[in-house]
Image (cartoon, rainbow, N blue to C red; front, side, top):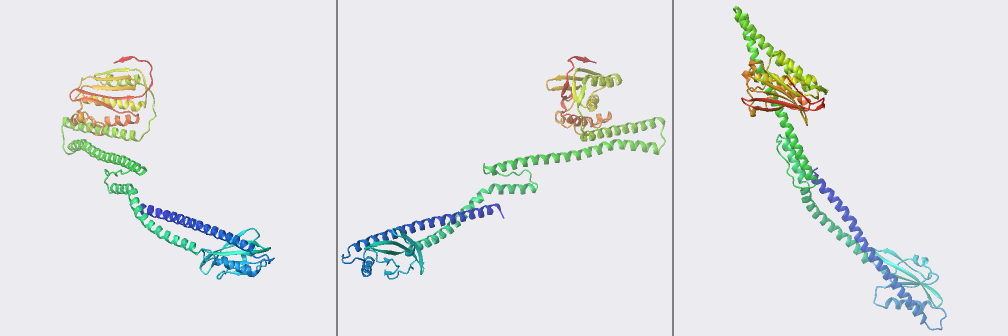
Length: 475
């Protein structure tokens, strides 16, 4: 069942219960008021008749010491036929509950006189033949006699009015419920409109239309729910876009990996087939073997780099204080002393929070990248600068440089700005990708400043663990 129909039915049930109880209370309250009024009038009429009976008894001739039954009957007859009310019914009984006079149609039993006491008035409601009557009674002292005066008043009209009131209210309730049902139907449609819009949005998104958004039509809780749903849809669309981008990146990675494998494998297979199928002189044999060896080393380096990237993505590192001067001295020994590279080191002494092996791998890959991008003998400047926000490592070369539109791509696996130049130096486009993965584990990232033909500056920042002393050391 739809929520709007549930809301409509619940409202109708509440309205029906409310109208039922309120109608019963209203009609019954009017009935009780009218009945109490009739009771008061009946008691007042009884009091008037009692006073008239006592007065008439006092006017009886003095020759009678005791009020005679015939006299009581005559007085009662005059009281019944006198006055404006032609429907007056009364009955008079003596001390022994003997009926001295009774109007025609006075059918009540003698239960009320038996309950009466001197000086009190009593009444009761009786039903007879489909009609309702109020029977009143009071004691009368007349010439040393104690009589009991009873009256009957027809109040059937009051009960008819109550029945008519219930009947009218039932009809009014039915009309009001029908009218309320129509009004509540449109109100429920209006209240549940945001829910219908949300349902439509979820169906559209389930069909793959992830950019569809629900329209906000209210500013209440349902409107806030619509806003939250749209925010969730935005986050979901962003995640889907990221997943699609990751899938595309993986496909590009596989394609680039296959392409990078194809070139060295083609050379290895070709030269191996040449050595296998024909007899070559010593120079050509050495050249073929050298090509096979060079491309094999290139495949080995590429496989090691890929393995390092995979391991880095799945590993958790433990940061510890690392002396930067020890790191730079090791780099100086590796590149300047052993490889005779024109590399200049300038740095501030400090300690950084890092994994020493991974940090050394990052610096080596950045330096190798600078060496490959530079001409032989071109200087490469390595700097370590203490900043307020951390310690900055920077490598500056004066090589071919990187175009601005390609600077955000060089950290992707197998991406090379100049593929022919990179391959000639056994590059595979994995060094900076590995650096990006390692720095992500250190909550850092590569910062690239480059211009084509003017060289590049690649840097990153790590948090400072301890500052030994600030001084310059060059090599």
